[in-house]
Length: 379
Image 1 (spheres, helix red, strand yellow):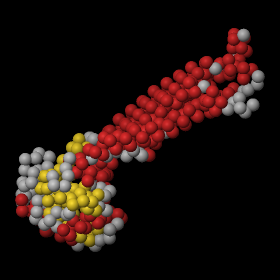
Image 2 (cartoon, one colour):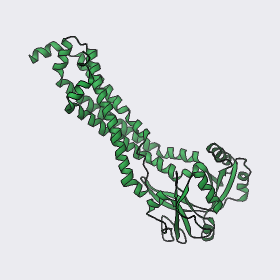
Image 3 (cartoon, helix red, strand yellow):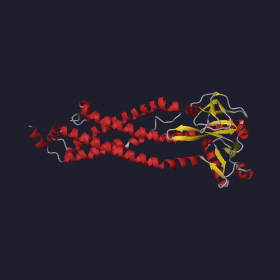
Image 4 (cartoon, one colour):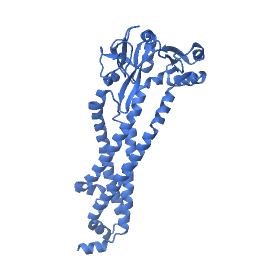
């Protein structure tokens, strides 16, 4: 009695009828998860590109080239402050999935360079640190791949639109770690670019995220915002979420349309296969099986191929994104997370909606089922 109602029985005996539905679910999971992961790469890129902001607070002047000593004096008195370095920087525009983004190359003294590497968890992977006053720079390995540079390449130069410096600046070292960073000598920028604005990088007294967030807020409250802009990590998160809100709205609409369409298709396929099995269902109903038990069997079968389709789709998505990352994106310094759990979460409503859609349509079919007339017609 149990084997007749086992959802596995039909699944194994009729793979030609069950596999198409599972394949549709696999393709839908791959589509939704891949698109979501690509959109999430925007967040990943921004928080990697500007990830150093977790470990420092930036200050830049407004309507002037320098932050005056009067304006910076309240910051120096803050008890949360551990170190404050004046920085004078260049920038490089790097390529991302969603266009070009500015990447700062901070001009810092040797002590400031050492501290920022310690706080951000970066280390020198190759080459050497820039020497004081020399036209030299170090950048992260991924940034070097992004701009097609290697040690010895000129990464800043006078005739470049996206990487300008008044003199050629060579890449002398590569950094490795959880975020991207560029460093050069502050004396170099001071000497060759006196008419560009300079700012400050502030580090907390204790190297911890709570202390740095406390310093962020203290600096924000102590400066005149008409003259000084404060760059906090919380502001980066807020601005990123705000800028991408419409993109995520479109993503949710697209995912909802895909889920509805695939659920409708799978529901139709389930009804087609159910119609082909009407003599079997009618016979079981005629010999005493209730409509509820027959519906439970159909529901179990649907749940089985939904689960199989989702698992295979998740695996296929991971392999696809892993290949995309390894062969296409990483060589160009672009970012994507092949194991994006949040993207897979977007696909969870897919099997649930398919199950509910199939449940509703099959229940209506079973309610209208007349086993005697079907058996007589077949006889």
